[in-house]
Structure formats: C-alpha cells, structure tokens
Image (cartoon, rainbow, N blue to C red; front, side):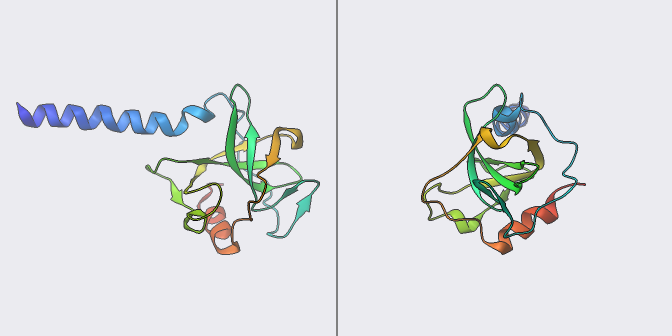
Length: 138
C-alpha cells in the first residue's frame, strides 16, 4: 500500500512541477522555431543578442527571457525552477537576476516594446548563449 501511495505522490508532484515551469508562458504566442538566431554581438535598438530582459508576454505580467534575435525579437523562456528540459545558466548565479534556467523548447516572438532590459545586468557569456542555441529544436 505504501508503494502505491509513494507512486501516486511522485506522479502528482511531477505534474505540479512541470505545470509550474510552463504556467507563466501558457498564453504567450509561441514561435514555430526561430528562422534566424542573431550573432552574439548583434544589437537592434535597446535589445542585444544574449541579453536577459523582462518581457511582458501576452496575458502575463513581467517574465524574464533571453533574447535570441533582436531584429525579429525571438525570446527563450527562463524560469527559477529546475526541471526536465531546463538548462541551468550557471554564469548568472551571482548576478542581479539570480539563478535561472533556460527552457530551450519554449521560444516566443514578441515586439521590441514588450521587452525591457534589466538595469545593471550583464549579457549572458558567449559559451552559455551558444549552449542554449544548440539545445533549441529546429
């Protein structure tokens, strides 16, 4: 009986964790897949490739995201919770935004006006940015 109860708790707990990871991005407009990913030093207006921004996605408040392409404004979802498919951005552990995990399978389109750079936040290092780009499904 105890094994069945443990199994049920594990199943329900895992569903809650996965649901929590994607809950903030549920109503945002998903992209089919970025057609182009900007060069690391590329920038357009206030956005730079590899920058962490606060994005106001459709139906949500402010959410942290990683800029993939500043011209088309493609964003990768970021979350505070580790989980399946999440890649830890270790270089951000001691910065202003704190420890974050990228969800490479969750890419969104936005507009420049929806994104606000975080003051005092440095860009993601090139190695971490390239790792996230490799994990994005095409």
